[in-house]
Length: 212
Image (tube, rainbow, N blue to C red; front, side, top):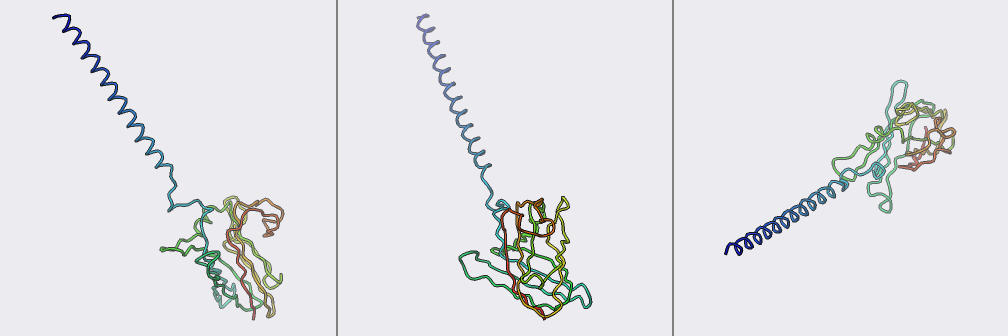
């Protein structure tokens, strides 16, 4: 009887040991599964905070302020809320006096949702990879463009600039282009020549111009 009891004891001990191992392994796999799920969730991108290159600019507002009395301010807007393929954008015609020097400022917005997203804030934060360019057609309708804002490396950014309107009544267009991830060391880029800037275009707007 003693031998039978010993065999039963060892069988029970082995059974308990095997059962405990199974329970431990099951808990280990369960814990690993939870950890992997949490890691996968943590790696997902927040759709509310897309990468900078995914930002959409629906609106560009150009403000021209005369630098001499009476310091009149003129505001012109490009707006395309539904983007490419939708309704035609609305573009104001720049109507300003001839023979004036203007201080210009640019405001970029994403007006698809409320509250409106001020994209200009992001451009200012990522200033080393952005730059505005200005092109007048004919070349003398607006001339003498001078950058007034610069990036952290002292290179032009261009959210503000100065320019002069032709001395007599004239008409034409003003193209404003924003490039990102461009070559700011390219030939002529620091002086506003877009030819060797490379990079990608975030927005490009052609404002009709009429000087009076």
